[in-house]
Length: 153
Image (tube, rainbow, N blue to C red; front, side, top):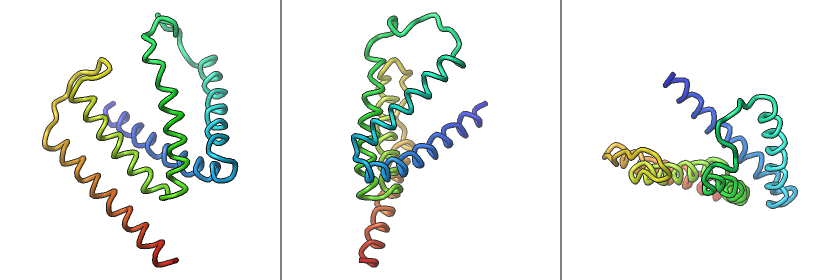
């Protein structure tokens, strides 16, 4: 089961990169705010259909949960907007590695502090090394892009 969850996470990462590339191009064509609107409108329609036909009943309703848990959509909108702008300027790879670095850094902070009701997981040297290696990866991908654009320009 653990391997299936890791594969699902990897698939999610692949889908985010595809989404970033598509949204970056769409934002270039119709504007960042329109692209964000289309993204969330189509996502809302799909979500409504999935909830109507696939979601099992739960003991709590939307009105019962702590209201801070509803803030995820706002972060999603900001994410889409930021990626639309970033992909156009720095490319999908650099933008995606930047996102992953941001996710890893914030995830380590959340894990270490136990924020949002999550179990606290200690910060270890292995986790710090992973963060440093990702920073190095971002540097190499960014400089590779810059070198390519200078060579072709």
